[in-house]
Length: 124
Image 1 (cartoon, rainbow, N blue to C red):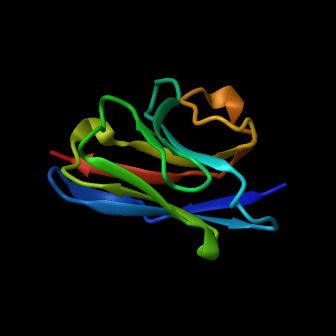
Image 2 (tube, rainbow, N blue to C red):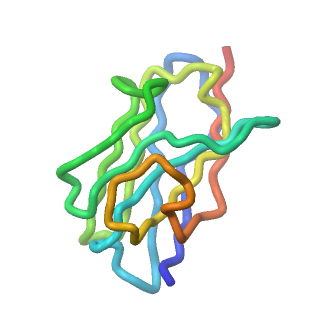
């Protein structure tokens, strides 16, 4: 099964930007729909963004719409999450996930493969 490794997290100030990367190995992700989720301390994991296998269709949580952009480079087997205008409430561990359900989805149970996560901390 595909293995996913996130990178790019860090400590930033409110209003700053970060770009997260998710590098896949063992298998090509070109046939996978991909997603980003996040989990803040004491809260459930929540959907952030998803992208179709071609990259032509994207889907965002209302809380990040207009600030975050998901993209992918299938040739590099990598998915990205560009995060602009970061807010303290964006602080969380961010996870990349791959789904073979064949639908762009905000539901975590549609995703079969998960990375270990990368910490994003936004100070006020």
